[in-house]
Image (cartoon, rainbow, N blue to C red; front, side):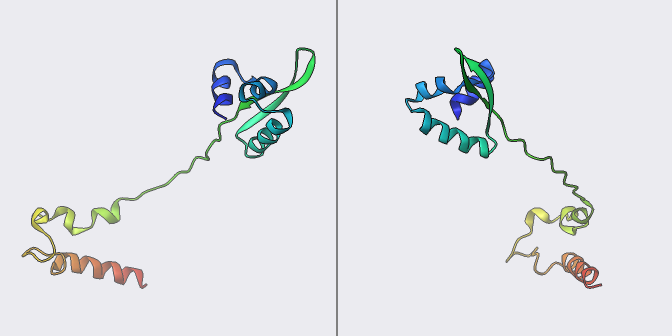
Length: 118
């Protein structure tokens, strides 16, 4: 696969018989491996004539990932009171400033819970 990828970048592909010689495999074994890669969409075969014989040129075909758009709204995150708390750097469980005892955070969580139960 890497050989086909490299030859595609440099020369536009590789003749499959040349690949068989480089790998030291016979036609039947090489064709079986190539057809597996073709089915997976990783390479494609283009028919051609090479030294008077019909054969195929193998060309690397990078898989293209479908573009996915994800919309992220920061409004709910911005409303978390911890982001604006002047004691955030001292807050932690077991200390004087404790998220388990914070009235602002408790009210925020209650508000979220009541909004979700509607």
